[in-house]
Image 1: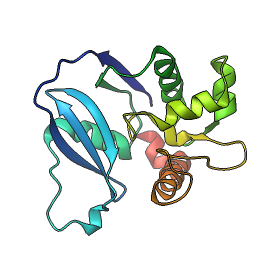
Image 2: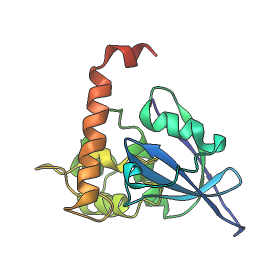
Image 3: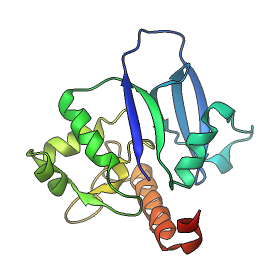
Length: 175
């Protein structure tokens, strides 16, 4: 139930986009060959789309993982960000499905400050893959993708609720 990241340097080439559906949300994947250069949650829900999503077989394993994160997935991500942010993102990837960790607890593990961890979360170029939604404030949800209220906070709550139901579902655990 983990994500293994291969950080790869990339010279700019023709970037393509694909969408995968996750809990009626659309995760847009920007990629070159098998290297994901960034992801972003669309503000348009799957149910709002008139045309079917362009879900390629190339990303079907990622789509399956997003809704059934029971096995380890290995992904090639474009190397970006500082060494510190890589450490934060690596720790975030270790947070088990259905669980959360506070910014301050994560900061303690990294011998850092909670605000620095929050900034690394805010600047995560791979939401949906690096599960920053599992990092919460001591007194509540905290932010998500630079927002402290609004649709992305609703998305964070939805992702956390979904993962909590997975944790409580015995069928899911046996897959």
